[in-house]
View 1 (cartoon, rainbow, N blue to C red):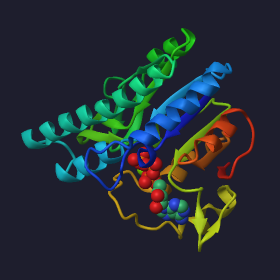
View 2 (cartoon, helix red, strand yellow; view 1 turned 90 degrees about the vertical axis):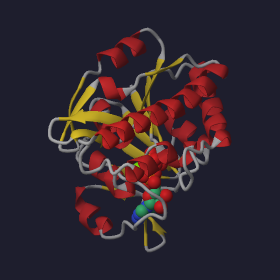
View 3 (cartoon, protein in one colour; view 1 turned 180 degrees about the horizontal axis):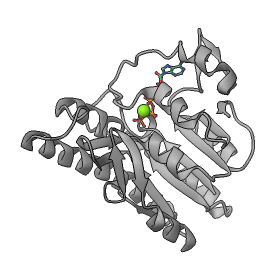
View 4 (cartoon, rainbow, N blue to C red; view 1 turned 120 degrees about the vertical axis):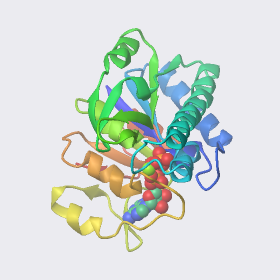
Length: 250
Ligand SMILES: Nc1ncnc2c1ncn2[C@@H]1O[C@H](COP(=O)(O)OP(=O)(O)OP(=O)(O)O)[C@@H](O)[C@H]1O
Ligand SMILES: [Mg+2]
């Protein structure tokens, strides 16, 4: 089984507000249709929220707890927007002949202080077993300390990918860069050194951007590739077990 995450930076216009990137969605749906037709079906698809999530979390101040009625309304609106983006992706996949089914994580997991503490993955396994493509996404989840908290797509990937053959994280850059130089591999050995070079992003990302991603993957024991999904053929190559320009997190 493989876990593929498509970042909100490729499915949406991340600098915008509730703005999908329709051509990004279409080209990735077409790519997944090719691999599906070639029998690569044992995939859990997760996607990020991009401009359907991060700016709403900032707007409604949801990152330090969801307690007031206004925050609850904001959390509900954020969940609704994430579901809307998921529907756009699922509809595009179905149109391309892939039986994709959206599985909103809001009802399956529990957080404790912003960390995923429990997740019922049975519905995901059941869908896989029946030959569907389960599609999960970054979402607002109940949190035992904070009322409700953001669960990033990256957190879901590390939870669901523990026993995966490989994890593929598609985003909008060619992998991790340090001083303009591409880093082909990150392991415990160079993690600290590379960590000093994560830059602040020009758009809202409430779940730690590239650093948040690496933190979820390091030490998992599953080969994890950060790849530029603005080039769908690179993601396709990795799904087929071939190489592609990327950063491998060991
Ligand atoms: N050292 C670095 N190397 C590469 N990218 C970096 C680095 N430091 C910060 N970044 C930023 O990380 C961004 C990718 O992370 P981001 O969380 O925005 O993507 P995403 O996961 O696709 O989106 P989402 O969180 O909405 O799913 C890149 O666009 C880049 O600006
Ligand atoms: Mg992110």
